[in-house]
Length: 177
Image (cartoon, rainbow, N blue to C red; front, side, top):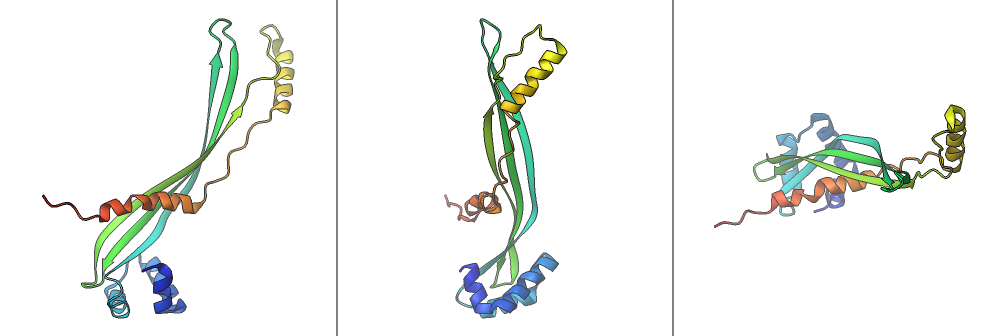
């Protein structure tokens, strides 16, 4: 039974009130479970409530370069920029027949996006160029190839999807030997 089905049975206002109570209390009280049992009789045995406990974004970068073995010069330089989102979700599974919690589970999902940028200097640095010459060369290279930007933050849906992917594994009945 979907979120929309439950909302249709309860009505939009009662459904919103139920979710607000769960959000405030962090659990579903027995009286509410008893009411849900009556309303959902024959339609659902279990009800699942979930809430996002943490949602964070991190940024990272790394650089790699390829050096020619003969000339000992850098032939290419790559900068990788990454944006990652990690979402922690708490799921509470309730059995409506005895109005008790049957499983309390924390799921963590992560999604990320990365971009690689060629950072190889267009104008080669000379070992004898001195401070001012090196500074000018770096300014020229920066104007020709500006610093890359981080990729956009992955959507919450992809992080939640990753969190929920493995929940089904826990719900499968174990094989009896």
